[in-house]
Length: 280
Image 1 (cartoon, rainbow, N blue to C red):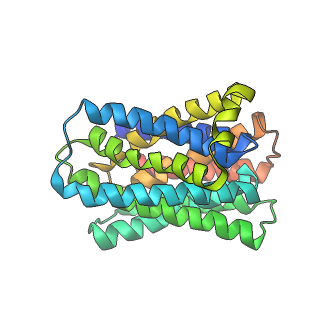
Image 2 (cartoon, rainbow, N blue to C red):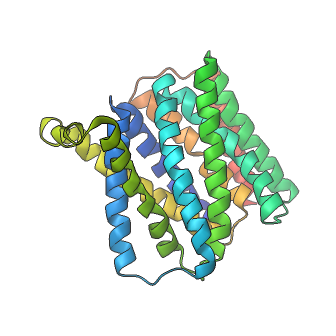
């Protein structure tokens, strides 16, 4: 993977950890995810209105990815209800690169060299070590995080194939896919009603504002990943993106006051070394 692409995806990883921390830091994560989704959907609608459509061949992937993303959002909220950020986030993100590599090999016929295989293994292993070190995950919490990881792998493979069929339109591919996020406020209103969605705008404007910012950060982070998936191996891009777990550990320690041990930091170094292997 080119060093420029590596650097851009690492920046996306930092953005990704940031919006996850914003989501985890809010008391009502379903409400926060809904407002994040509204921000994403509004931006996507504006992009769609002023840009050409992606190629017809990519449309089945746009629809499939959009639906998987909605399931991912619900799974992520459920995972954060059951575990700390320092546990749920690494399990979800660490389990996905190996699944993405397998999916890319099966469905996109991607081969992977020894350095990339080593890098993916180091990143996944380091992330899982971060997740399990010093934590006692409940069966329900671990299952929720692993389910989230499976959805991440699924939408990454779908988008990796879909964007390559979009006739060089990663921006509009991303925007059309994220239009599915209009379903999140529909689901929220169906579950709780309209008042619980709008009342926090007056009662807790800072919380709603942070969720809106988180949505903008989220769409930027994943838009970069879709751009990288056009030409980069899916497993390698996925593994490099999941170095976001190192940023999540830092955010969890500094802002959420979660404990981080020496072994935790060592595992972070393994993840960083894996990222170097992907850049070779």
